[in-house]
Image (cartoon, rainbow, N blue to C red):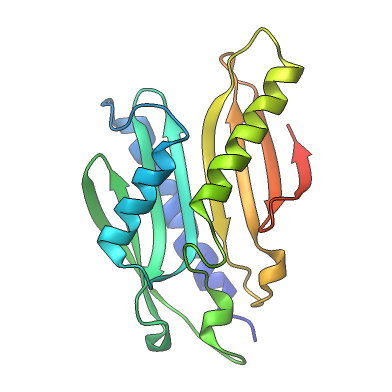
Length: 191
């Protein structure tokens, strides 16, 4: 029932490092900072991959100098056990990896999620707002902004473990992380 977790972790690690490299090397604005940009992000994802695509990983990173960077591992044919890693910076999508899945038990769809079924951009937008409000209440003199959002399917196929990890940053560089389940309940907060 477990995917080849070492291979998946390696592929996601490479995807994450490419995102960090991109953030460090790019100096142009791609989006105006606003949580309402999640509507544009959702549109970008559905235009590129279709409404019925399956994801194992989705991360959205915001940098005030760069804008939003979107990283995904996605397929439109889950039964093929083949997925592709993509990164979007500005208006350009770049294919960055091939991922082969190994299924020992269960249905492959149990290890993936879809937009507007398990994962909701409206929910993400709401949770980002809730998280920012909470930091504003704690740190009255600082302006919190979105750092990143990530969703990853668990390697054991148990979607009850899935959730939204949201990082909020302050002007002075403090980071606050929130983990919400798919229903929007706060499970854990740390900084």
